[in-house]
Image 1 (cartoon, rainbow, N blue to C red):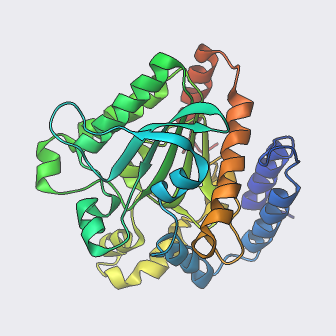
Image 2: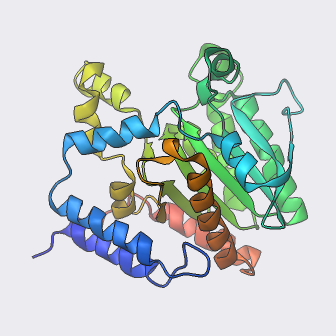
Length: 310
């Protein structure tokens, strides 16, 4: 007899069966992947398999937000600054055209080399970054542009200066702003989705994860340091709270999985961008035409239901 985890994933698959993830086709390829993920769940995914996802999500050659912007959007215009203190380079924000349609886009940017990573703070935003994000959210609302966010951060920056500048309040306001939007919103975890730093720009109508992304309330190392006082137990922690896409889908934390090229997104940036583009377009098309009040109502109900145990 199927256990509750299997039944939960089967239910998610059934709901996705009538949805188009790739424009012009049914979900056949994606459903096959989910079926394989169901089988892995049934076999109790090993620590090694989950940790492999963590390593792929953090791979140094994995595409970042600007890599996808260059391959997916035309006429991208980046907006800078929070109109208060500074421009936080950990968050990219701007307007561009996706398949001829103007959208607003937000995303974390980690950087490729030491110099860029330092300048972008390894993708860990200060409050100023989230205030910049809210500027673009409000612009999207004012002009009726759909909002797409790409999540890839270990978490919001935890330093003293960030706390002094109102880090917790900025994260909360960013979430509240997303909940109030009357335009379609799609968020995709493209690498690491860590804690409040990720959720700040991921309160969307559709939350997706790339196949090898991870999404969790804390990093495996942080969890291990708390539970076992030993960060080297990160692999054990990752297995315990199952932060990979298959389990996040089964738990209902996300709405779908975006496939990646064979071997992972890092081996084929163009292929990964094409798959991501089609998934985002498909979900935006589903949401198009839904009245603003209905979008807000469904979005709030969705997030209020998370974590509720029957």
